[in-house]
Image (cartoon, rainbow, N blue to C red; front, side, top):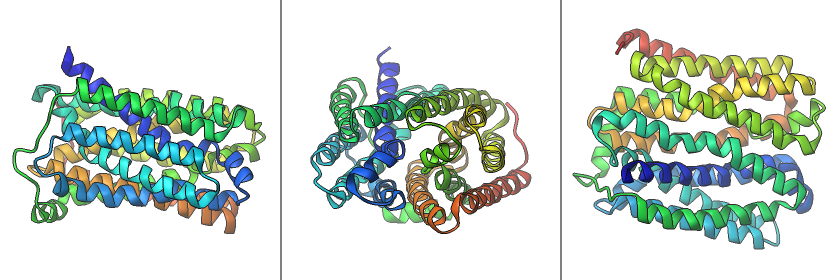
Length: 384
């Protein structure tokens, strides 16, 4: 029982991290209005932690060496709490960015070791289940965390939203310390091992796929609030639509697990990549009314919610003996992609408008789909 309680606490921990990472997306209009900055500039609140998280995650396995990975997760959650407190007290956007740097450190630490700690709680036959449960926190954040924080931000104030998340991080730091079993690397990771992992074909394709798909996703999703308002959705209803997006994301996270087990991770990734690309295309073409938003956001969320666990399963199945190193590299790519997506989306929104931003997202998604289709064609389909 304790092992699954530990995995569940890991899921709630990533719930808190995803919420703090994506919280500016939901409160972008009110944050930018209070701070007196354009929405494109406010998007740096998503870009900065992504870049910092990438640098942190790729160096984490080497820096922590023989340290208990559970303590790394506790440290990450404490950093979230400190970041939230600094944001609440920030007098201007400059201090907010400093706080977001600290959030980036926490995200990088947590993402780099989460899969290793999750599978370390259970028997090898349950690894896929443990990963699915641990990463369900990402969908949970979209279902409850970001919409709830968005509601708090739009009705009570965006600083209050960060305060709630910071308090939750403190609680989860304690629970992870108590419920999660210690996990240490059998052999300390060295820079040479990281380089070896980076040369592996499976890891290289996972990183490339992450860069393409996640940039495609966040170039548009980072600015979903302005898109919804352009479609005629009132600001007060944005949280509800993000809730629908998140519910669908949780369903996608769970529904993809049987595909991974029976058909293999490459096939599952291909399904998610194609679905995400088609969803972005539908948003580009059809998101014009509130009714369209109600129909399109759940379809989009279904595939977006399955992306993180599916790509991580791809790393687990294709990285060979370098799973921890491959996980760190993919985590770095994931967070760089969030940062690049937010930055690219902001630039395109300001210069090329809604159409240009969505067109680039669709093209990047199509390139990611082609990449994984080529990999799967060379390795062959797999069955249980």
